[in-house]
Length: 190
Picture 1 (cartoon, helix red, strand yellow):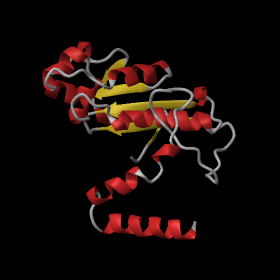
Picture 2 (cartoon, one colour):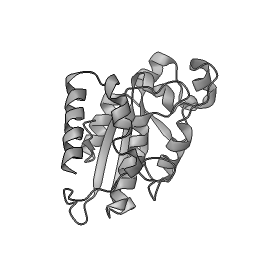
Picture 3 (cartoon, one colour):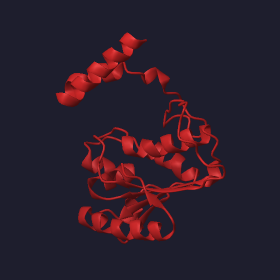
Picture 4 (tube, one colour):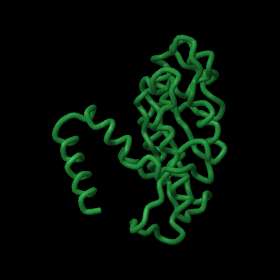
């Protein structure tokens, strides 16, 4: 085991010092088999079981806002949206009640297109369907809120009718974050 850890440390250091692209094969073998489907959103948000973790206080209620400005490649799932499913799955697996998890995602910039119905999405993405719509629907069903920046929407010509069902338009991303902070949401730093 000591030798394996040493090899792992050397490879990780090499990845940090040189190029992330040279590390892709290493990262692929670094433990993806540890990630399993969750119990709440089973098709998305795979998580690993972790021992020796920071204890979650009994009765803790999570109110977390996420910020999304990075668009996915055309026709692909946006990994940042999948992060919401991971957050829910891992915390429920750790004993947090689903009703004690309140999540919101504020979307701006080109990422707003990942919140649109196929008729709009296909115009921008060579006829490809929006791979995010199923996940967004499942997240909304468990109470996740999505807010698209109205200023971004105006810039890109996105109307409320272009948005996926349950996705809301905010005056701006700035406004949405301010309101969510006022309501007690912390902002996830990544």
